[in-house]
Length: 333
Ligand code: AQP
Image (tube, rainbow, N blue to C red; front, side, top):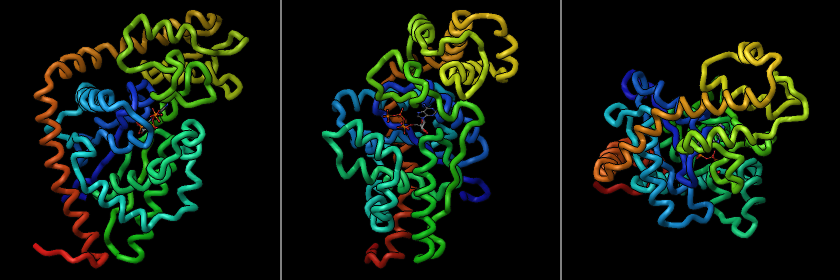
């Protein structure tokens, strides 16, 4: 808590071009906390290097992700927007929390299993301890609420376990956070394989709709989306592709699944896919225009990174110093 305000923290990795999954599952929901919470939204570049990145791309995407945060309505005067590697306390607290996290716990993390299967040539220790760094990100700010998509909930649960374990030994150190997910859009699926999550690092460009895709590309990708051999537009676990498109259409139009089923009753997949593409492109157009305007002003983005890092460091230092004191590290001022 900050006075009477609760705290929100969340982050996005600049590990690829951001997708409508990142947008609907996370970024779009960040804004609703801006007024009543103390909010920290971070570009988590240290997480991104758990997988090999091209340095120039990582640098460029760090600016882009910050610009996208702002284009999605996050006012830097109301939210602390910053880059993780500019606040060294994240890595320092992560080391300490490593000593309060069990090997068995990390071995059970689904994302570690998925990513180590996908990057079999680079199963590094960072990939394994990724959730510990994420716990440090969250706990440094005494966070109450973490808005995330469903794939990150397991990591927030582990963060809670780490906080509780630490608090049991050293009482009153960390606030124990809670994950919150949007009602709709918490797991947007791949357009090529609707059993799989849509991911920014997917090599199949047609599987993913990026926030910055142009209108024609968005419509083309939806036209190609995998559905099934039937023709009925209805939400059904047996119809994963169609159900995913209904979710996306619902998120961008505000219509319920029942309304959508009625709207497209008796019409074919072709009509429906076109409507999903158009609704997505319409909804993203203002974000894209604002993003382009912000990205052109590199000096402003750099000033913002500096200001955000200074603000975040102030709070991060307080928690880290409390933790160090509780552990018995000598502190000389
Ligand atoms: N498909 C998705 N549906 C809903 N939410 C999603 N998120 C990611 N994909 C979807 C949410 O976006 C936030 C930021 O994610 P991240 O950058 O921390 O990494 P991630 O969860 O690993 O996302 P990606 O896109 O799959 O990245 P890569 O390919 O680099 O691993 C999180 O809140 C996440 O839940």
